[in-house]
Length: 153
Image (tube, rainbow, N blue to C red):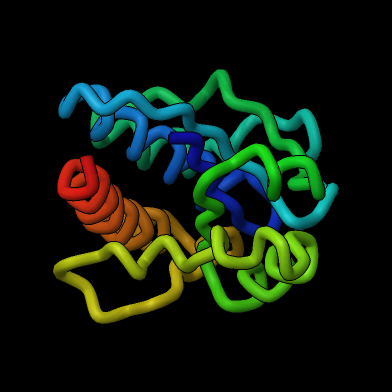
C-alpha cells in the first residue's frame, strides 16, 4: 500500500500528516509506503514550516528531514491512496489524476472518527494554536486510516 498526503505547499499540513501517519503505521506494524506533496511548486525542496516541525515534535514525531515537492501525474498512478487536506486540493488532484485514477483521491479527514470537520484548515497564516488544532485533526484521521487498513487486511 502506498499513500500520498497532499496540501497546497507541502510545508505544513501534508508533512505533518506524513509524519503522524508514519508513526501510527509503525506502532501498528502496518506495511505501507508514505510520502507527501503539494499541489503547488511554491516550496519545492524547502523544509517544513518550523511551527509544523514543533507541533509534530510535541507528538513525538520528527518531520524536520522532510522536503517539499510538487505532486505530479505519475504520483496518481504510483500511489494507491492520495489524501487531500481540503476541497481545493482535492479538486486539483482529481484533475491531475484524470478518470483513470480519480477513485484513489479522497479527503484525509474522511477517516477521522472524533472530529466532524471534513477539511484540515491551513495554519500557515495563523499562530501556534492553529498548528495544534491541525495536529489533533491529523492524529484522529491517522488512527482512523490505520483502523481502516487493518480492517481491510
